[in-house]
Length: 347
Image 1 (cartoon, helix red, strand yellow):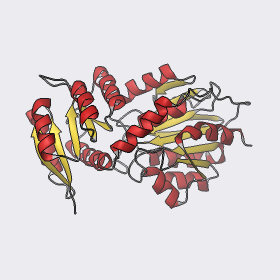
Image 2: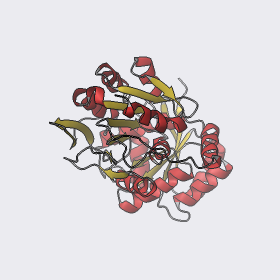
Image 3: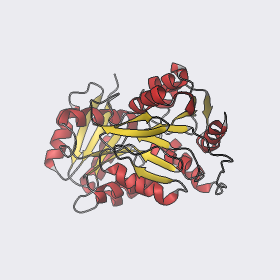
Image 4: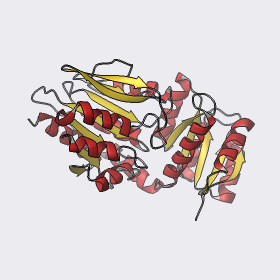
């Protein structure tokens, strides 16, 4: 088995030690070196050619964002950002992902047990190793070069609900989908694999860009037209129904498909309480999370959409959902907003 070669870049000796020790238990991952700052990291990247880099944002001599910009320009490779669980840390992590990082994880001990952190770190490294950086750059370039799309409209208000799941590459994919949706779009629930606290900054960023309201979900929030509820990091989100009212519960619980929040947890609840009133969407990401839940949604009468391979950063979750038989339509990212609105208008 060819191992995924990882370089850990962090000024904290504790983080370097924890990451190295935890990843040593993974048969398919090897930490080939660690570095306390970007200058040492630069030399080790050139010498060792790692497959994936974990990069702390806050470091001496050169901050992580500056180093990331240089790396993406001269030696692009998959980078996972390691950040503190603060509002500033969340904002910096989102900026890093716009620059070119493929994922983000919180520093050890800040929100997760070491065991949970280890499982999520390993999965994020496996996902990052599958990212074709040249393909990702082409996707970003095509989005930047594309003429601004006219905002879509919805001719009538319906009682439908929309559930969306995403992982690696999902922050940008979700933005591309949500910015096109009109203010009277049916209520939306979203699970994006992100750590605790970072989802707060992500929701605020989306809210500033979209016609609909986007907020980090709070337990008991109603699912209403014109609002998208984003599952908070490190908590599962489930949909419930009371009479004609849909609402969400935010809860803890074990990792599902190595994730918390998990797409399957949301989709399973939507299948149970939404039935044929629901539309399910699965976007770019690695792994199987969401595949079985989407199948249950379809079996309950929901209509379902998967992002296609050409527009996905990682065609893992959509592919698994398609192969499980839970997908009605496979469409490119730029066509997903129109596909959603077409389905919610159907009687």
